[in-house]
Amino acid sequence: MKVTCNIIKDLMPSFVDEICSEDSKNLIYEHIQSCEQCKEFLESMKKPLQSVELSVEKDKLKAQKPFKKINKMHRIRIIIVAIAVMLMTMIGMMVVINVGAINNFLFPHQISVINEENGFGEWKAISFEGNQYLIYDSIFYKKTVTNNANSTDSIKMRILDEKGNIVLNDLIIDAGTTINLKELENNKYYTVEIWADNGWYMLNFR
Image (cartoon, rainbow, N blue to C red):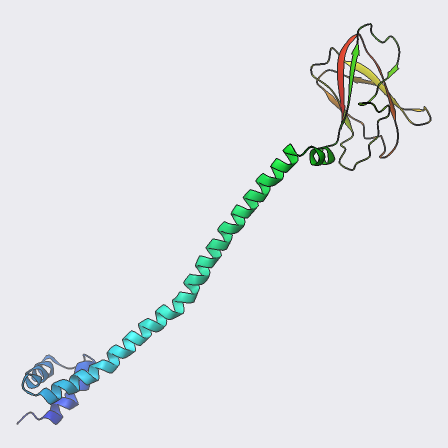
């Protein structure tokens, strides 16, 4: 029986789908060697399949592209935020350290330096850089007092209110130590008196 073009064309779908037998494949190969028409027909059958595969791959790449872009933008935003936070932290620290007004506002303190050669022998009121009263006029005060580590010795201290009443009495503060003054109220004027041996003392009220 003569193998006609119609028979070959009937076999081509199975050939393209790769489900035909080896004999059918060989028959098609032999035929298209001498039949240009069937050869072109076979190529035309393969093209739609290749086009579909290319289209699927393109759609896949196209679908992935926005997600890749989002991930990249997300990483960039994280890096930018981290750098911004680091810069703001560094700037904030520099401002606090170097700008005196801000430093004093956030970390207020009042210092009293006493240099007594003959000793006190009695209670003596101290001043704070020209101000005779201790006043906690900021919410940032910790309400503590520190006897500087370089002070000559420990001191005894008492604190009086505006009417002269003793609020805190006989507080002993060793050199290099800190005590709390939580009993004192904000925005009230207090007189601070100390009793100490002769020497140099520095008290830091925070």
